[in-house]
Image (cartoon, rainbow, N blue to C red; front, side, top):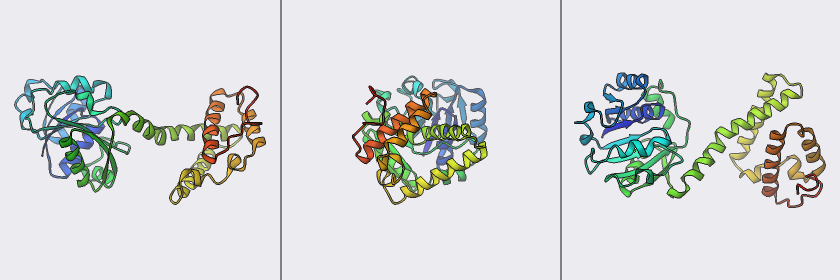
Length: 285
């Protein structure tokens, strides 16, 4: 395939590296950052311009089979609409946003869709083979026009992975789930480490404890659902007294107490504990 990339940052590099490793030709790039544009041009040896309508790219768009749009979500509509009437009718346009559906493209006159990998994006310095190894076997999500989804599935098949077809209306909810499981789990680790440190643990000991606790949870998830893996702790034991002690100890840090209470409510739901008596202060049941 002949490929163009709009947005030559980390995700743009990923798609170009994967394509080149699998035998595709990277024909052009579009990038507003001069530094990123220069790096992309040097690595892939293709034409790179700062805008879709640049004269330097005018004769290249019509020969593309696939265009990746990897810009930030807020620029998807603006950038993609600049493609109208530039590509051949058989071309496919895919964006890589996890939160925004392909409806952002409107009616461009080409098959449009989205393909999002459920993984952290490697640095631009990651070489082609290492990039392929990172993405090999991964789950991706896709949605869009039939032809675009079919190509997305073929691309993921080359990586030995599989695709979950999304309802476009659920993209934001799906991405929120990914953020909770990835980014926000790290925030929980940070909060936990600081709590241990406030009890006299060193930073090294705190981090070591958090890693071991997480490792134990991950091992349990290999063979159990989350609710089944929640085998211990005061919620599973219906230990209202200990929970009250926890909440009292966190009373001076409202944000952490709010986080604790949010997880407490969810944990109680997981184990089917509906009685709030004696757990929350009066008026907060």
